[in-house]
Image 1 (cartoon, rainbow, N blue to C red):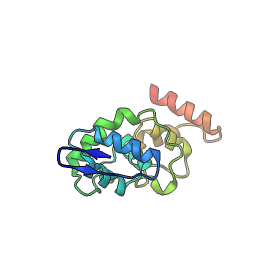
Image 2 (tube, helix red, strand yellow; image 1 turned 180 degrees about the horizontal axis):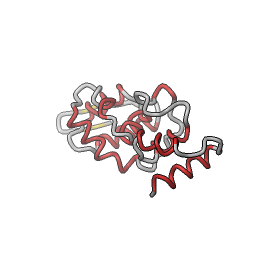
Image 3 (cartoon, rainbow, N blue to C red; image 1 turned 90 degrees about the vertical axis):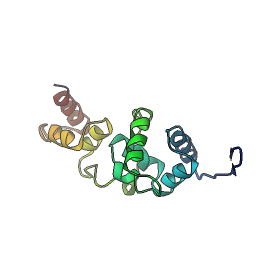
Image 4 (cartoon, helix red, strand yellow; image 1 turned 180 degrees about the vertical axis):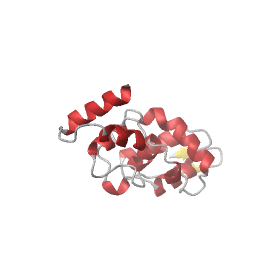
Length: 146
């Protein structure tokens, strides 16, 4: 419930995740309740988190009333809040515009850790593919740290 000087609004959410994402969006300057609801009606909370982590402005600006500048501001201000988020349970349909390589979990893991898709693919390609998933990720991380 949001009560203002001349406003009395009631919002409902299907999950606790939607409510917490709504409250995070309200913490962004220039984002009010209407814009936050427009964003949540366009993208799911998990897709929003993925969009913020991967700097996907296009996914956020699809919402009514959100332009490129506001989408960039949302990404900038929420990036730290989603930095350590566990994005491994994101449903396949929420994956933004092919950012994740569905056949390569190691690339996906590196992208979630903050590396660009190009960097992640290049690092994984340089590792022996016969290794297990964890070993591929470890070796790729070693290469990226150099």
